[in-house]
Length: 184
Picture 1: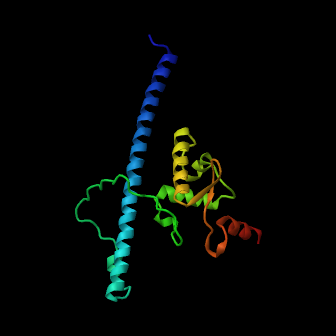
Picture 2 (picture 1 turned 60 degrees about the horizontal axis):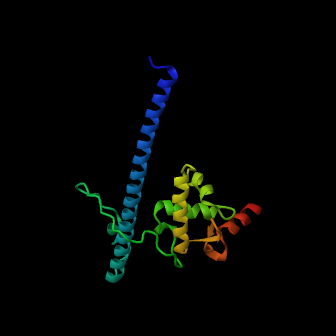
Picture 3 (picture 1 turned 90 degrees about the vertical axis):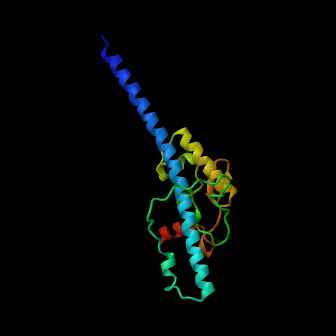
């Protein structure tokens, strides 16, 4: 006969295996979701740009091109788009570029850092972007932070501490605007 402790250990081991399988599925689905959001974002920006260019070339007013800007529902299911290896999903920062061009997770990271009172570490960001503070997530986020530094969106003022690289409108950093607003 199996003891109560042995039975509980067996059930615990089975539950741990199920949790690990589900976590692996979540990681895979999250990666697929990020890829599809990036494709969707690029297509949306492309459609809006084409509509704007067509309007400028034809001399039409904005109202006439509104139908080009409205998304069209697909009549049949759309096959998943294959991701292109080597495509730049995080563009290099340049004047006038907003965080809207970034994939969702990168946009969240930049916004959290912009709202912070000072430079942040990867492990400090995780709860703010809805991730558990486990080693794998910390390392993944650190990789994203480094990529944002390479592309000019953030700076690494001290090793492992990240801050906004650019000032907001009016020559003020987002943090100094927040500080002024709170002191009034």
